[in-house]
Image (tube, rainbow, N blue to C red; front, side):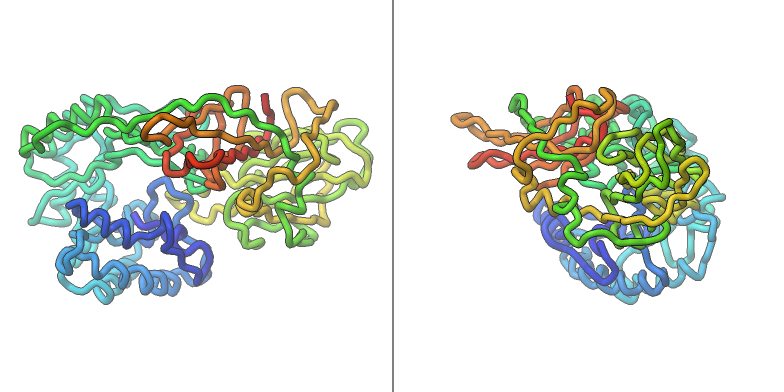
Length: 524
């Protein structure tokens, strides 16, 4: 998959550096002897944040983006000495309501223009005539995807309806399933996967395992489904190789099935990657979001009568702080409400620095607050990940509709887009004279605050640093950075994910590793 918004974070701004260096990745695959099925989009799903950047003229933006991406891919095609044997056009378009064949034809023309006539272009859709009706197009080889446990014969008969001849292909055979915050971890039994894989291979069909190795939604890149359910940082997927690259029972079960049809490599199976427990990290509070607001929003606020969305602020990820003043005395609790469910997605509310509670999309639309007239009402809004599948493809973030206080619409906002990642990389630690403690905070809720600490890699032990995990005993919900790298969201209070995977390449052994945590609700 090539996520468009990962490489074009802002319209006309392209990034293929560092972890985004797609050509180096393809060259590495080639050097290793791997072949690549490139799923170029423009839409990819993949439980990735929305996938498409915000544009006014979609087709024009697609042409411009593909004019950047596809010429970079052409030297890496198999016929040009590269590893790319097939290129997918769109993704499960038959599941989308539009059913626009002219759109698919324009993509076919665009891909051929940039990649030539030799490369195999294909589509992937659900294994039914309903999905293939709008997802398949002459000139694009139609493949299907389906999960284990279903009717394999019926699935491939559906493909034959679009492709009477040619290879049978399940281009996305699900080895597990995705997770959502607040739901049980998805587990698909190894023998269920193995049984269906055997049925696929027994028919002489081709199969691509999705996922073969689990992954991680670092930073803010996780997506969401409707009704609104954001996905967690881990994309382990209950895959044959875990998020950390560990061998699982499922790996050995699938290997046994594959060995019935193909010669397996000789020699020992590579072991799971080593892990190391580094011990506890002591963290110290350096300030609340409000206390260090000048560091987080150096440009200052945008003023508006009514709230603006993240997109209107050109803030696509992370957090925005909305500030207004209480229009009246609220010595008795007053109702702060989002009557149109307009908090996208989670808001942390305080009055003059005193925490009041949380508003949450689809779940908590009203809280009681207290404070004096003229007090600052601060609402820190978190983008929890955009919906990436289905009709709802305009998942705007922030306060997307008005808030009310006892039925009165709140107006005259100061809105602070927060560059937290930039502040962390500029060293957020040491900004204040010392840790701030409030004695009148409710015990179950604190103002969102930053904490920092260091982790030193032990000396005298070979092959360190190694992969590890970070656990959050007593912490509630927030974001963590290691050496400025945004590891992702933690939310053990809701689960199912309790630990975050830490790849060794973000750790250093020569100097202490800097740990920064933004805790949004309650610290130990």
